[in-house]
Length: 475
Image 1 (cartoon, one colour):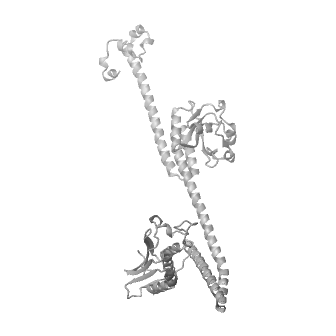
Image 2 (cartoon, rainbow, N blue to C red):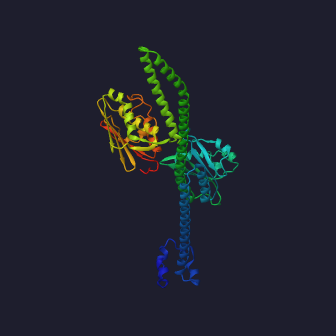
Image 3 (cartoon, rainbow, N blue to C red):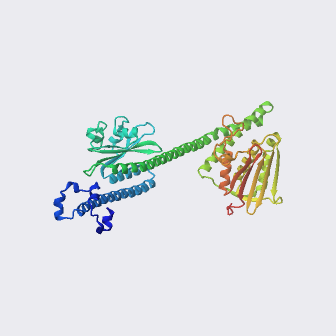
């Protein structure tokens, strides 16, 4: 046939080719009658060419339509991936599905993760209250069949299909004639059904519609699942924030309510201790020590609340950081000697008071917590070393011990509130796990940094870098 198109002058003189050509129309015509008006060799060729051209044009038209659909699906996919909220996402899917398949309506049904029921999530014209209440059975329904079989389902006349339930039309005040349903699937799991309803053209649904709906459904399913996961994550964060707020409120109320009776206990215990002697005085010492420990815990909770709410006010003054280290070390001297620990200190430069412009009480908390921690986690006969050095306009403080050490994956977590390295039910070391969290907060409010370097079983080195004055804070 190409020869005719290339060179009409080379038309064969034999009827053999025409007789063997299945597309030839000569067998349906009277060759004698045709020879009177036309060349008997050129007529069937011209008819064949006309038929082939029409078929070719139809194929080209079909391909062009398919390419157009694919281009629109790509654009829809890009749009779906940019929408992170579930409700507007479902509306976009509904609108896109009806436009691409040229249908009157569309609905999306999703499987409830808690109950496993198939429920309407969105529909053309919006989700009415009646539609929200409907539960689509997984057995004996169109949507249920699509979910169970994980296949597209095309029904050209729903009135003749027993799986169609008229209550859906009643809820929507709509008449369904034909329907095409495709599964919404993510990672080989069906999460719902996309249905397009009532093809507008007279030809009805065709293979192109099934392919378009299936392709759109695959893209929509991923977008829906991502939006649902994001919604769940945001809800989890909201719940966590509420729990955190409840915890903060509890700490605030508890610390406030405990302070008053504790002050009374401390007052009476101190008064009685000054007026008694012997065994009673020793017992009162125990009461006072316990009350002081409780007050320390309450102070920790109050400080923590201030850090969490960014309600920390600095009362700055210039004082000797070196002398503060010496004073705090002396406060712990009894405990240090009781555990037979060796405490050493080094100051660079040694002949300087190492003055700092900061909040003395809060710097005291930093040092006291770090030294107390070192004492707590260092076994008898161990060593603790405190090194304080002025480098440029920064103070570098190291509190080094030969204690139990910290695993590398706990380096950051030990500064979290209430975090304990040991299991809570079997731990050997007391405390609420607030000391390092408070320490970090006090360091950061002074525009400083804190971190730990440690080897399990060898010991730890807590490093604190503090500016020497408020205008020197770039670490």
